[in-house]
Length: 435
Image (cartoon, rainbow, N blue to C red; front, top):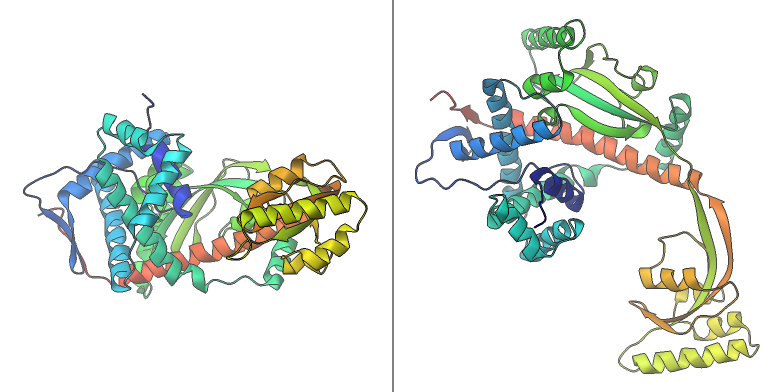
């Protein structure tokens, strides 16, 4: 039987949701009586929920080779994570955000696909490790809701202009363009309207932590897991590999000048005090692709034109072209692709992955100058002719696309951090761990 480890499944769930929100899957313990460990507005966090989450966080930390913090600190960190999860779910409920079964089924199917399993095999593999499939689905539903409320509150409000991309690329050239950085991060947060005494207390704590991870040689990941207020605390503060453009704005000027293994000084921001460690750096690569110059004629099917009609018509056009008639003229007169028909069916130089898969396969296998047999895609029936192929250095285009994505992601992360802080500051939270 295939052994699916919890953390592998969850990494795939994170890909399926295009957001870094998923915490480990668990089989929730069924208990007739369960005490409350925190009140979150009109909601509650139960002891069984905390217990299950603690177990899974320990597994995560072991998998990342991060020492597990002392039990009391771990418990408070995990409880804070659960509080934030409940706050986000409550906000989603207020806004009427729901997740239908079709969306949930697609996400679960994606997990199975990425593990090269059927749904039945995935269910059996999880059961063999004591995980309840219904609980897994319920957890995924919650995480999709959180992803959607974040999308609504944050991502849709983030815009990236061409000027920002130009400035970003200029900064990259001056600050280590072509490199990626692996970082860990510790945040000691302060409330949005912090008093001078609160700020000073946070500064002293940050200074103490900085001394521990530098002069005293404490494990940075373990300290992050125990003390950091960042959303990545329970991953040992691991921010993963990031290109220069995805570095938080606060760190962008510092990281390229740091040595591998170096820990930064304490950095102040409106959200608190930060400490970062450069774990590693590596070079990025250039992007050379093979482009194909292609043209086509498209016949769409409808209530009048059947598949057979479309195919026969294209076979006739193919014979006429083979006999010497102009592809360009016939495309102008016959193609249902309004965008390319006026250009004689010319689609220009096409990058890999631009066309739908079947079109791409036919185009790739077709010798230069040949005309394909009629074939069908979701757009209708086509014949295709390849006019040329070339190697193209797409590094500049790739860099601009990456820059846009990285700026958008950076802005989204910064806006998300602010939104979560406001959500937390405005909430009523009553911890009852000691009761």
